[in-house]
Amino acid sequence: MKIQILGTGCSKCKQTEANAREAVENLGIEAFIEKVTDINKIVELGAIVTPALAVNGEIKFSGKIPSVEEIKEVLK
Figure 1 (spheres, rainbow, N blue to C red):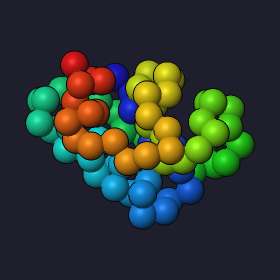
Figure 2: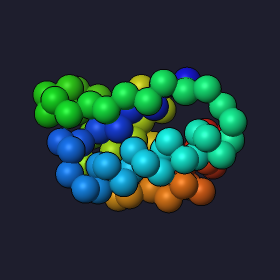
Figure 3: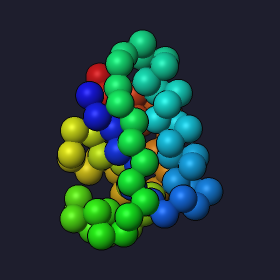
């Protein structure tokens, strides 16, 4: 599973990454977590508002910090 955190590195992006890592750990699954900070790549992936979180190339959250529980629901 590939999880991408899309954003320029702001505090909201960092919190989204921390929540994603905690969700993966809580579920005991293997996932590659990638930070995408290049604005052109972010737009290419379809995110209009950051922070955004994509799973296997599909945007699941955009414009908000998803909670650990919200991320866990998407990853199940």
